[in-house]
Image (cartoon, rainbow, N blue to C red; front, side, top):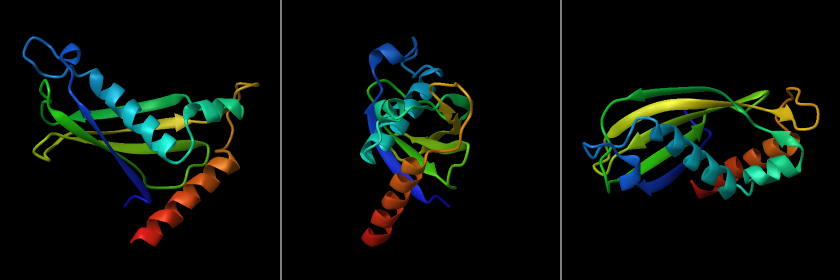
Length: 143
């Protein structure tokens, strides 16, 4: 069960497809990044803010499972979530749905946290944890 989730919609562009009009498999990683970036921005935490505060968040691991194709000009819904509070790592489960609402891709991205100056691993910054807690509270008040 997720403690925070976010949905991002995007259209499959012609440049992202192969000769069959199917979105190329490598573009799913780009979808994951787009959704993750917009989710963080929606909480007031664009990646630039992480870097400004001296924290970098490199990708440690990406997992993907393809279950169906995405076609040219189709609108996709990318759902990202957080199932547990981050410590030294943040795992973001991700699902991609086609226009009919069918799950066509599932996976996750694991981000680490490193001090930008020392390039050494660090724990999730307290200001990031506080932003997540505010988002959780906001979502609880909506329900």
